[in-house]
Image (cartoon, rainbow, N blue to C red):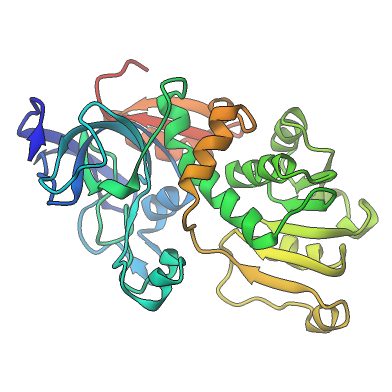
Length: 349
């Protein structure tokens, strides 16, 4: 193992049960042959973290033992596994929080996000990044430029979701794109759509503050879905990125889909939902889902580094490791909260 001086002990914020988080000591992990040890700089709060905190489960993933949350993370490499030759100690990285087998049919086809053996940070029973140090495969530690902040490097993770959604939607210059749901991922989906040359990008939500944020970020039109059916407020679109997961938003979006429109389900909603099958058939709509992302980090880093997508402005709260409970509760206590950020290390907040 190649390393600089690193401590042997650390602390981590551990979810013990619903709404109970405790900072506990732990050993600093040693990287395996193909892994790197990363000192964590910043971790964004994701909706999945909040859901585990509040409910102790998401679908079939159940918190049955103490779990470290947090998967939107950046940091600095502090040690290398003995077989690592493509990374260096001291390199700042955005951490892609998943490891896959690399050998199954899905991995070999480039769809490693669908690997049946995928291991993902902060998904039970795998610990996440609310810790001073974590290890991950070196190829998932993506170098970032010095001009990129720790916060932006952490938010490459949700930006990668948006990049993958745009890829699945095959957004091209001139497209009319509707994004339903103006949370962080929805806002980033709108950003990526504009970066890919969409001629019109609309954003719908029921939260006026988030719609104002979407306007400030460059949305062509914003629509409060509570004011009436979308079909009465906007013209037909040929791409829909559904980011809310809310059943009314999903069903309402189909009404504004032009013939042959591409609809991508990004937000996680109810496991079963009624969809307008006749409309899908008659208009020849293409409907697909997304599950995380694959091969998106380099492109997302390039988008953010070029200034095409502003990640820093999404940060609406800053918390230390001892304040993880407050960070996880921010979306419920602050109606203007978008992306709380946790700093596990010594960086001042």
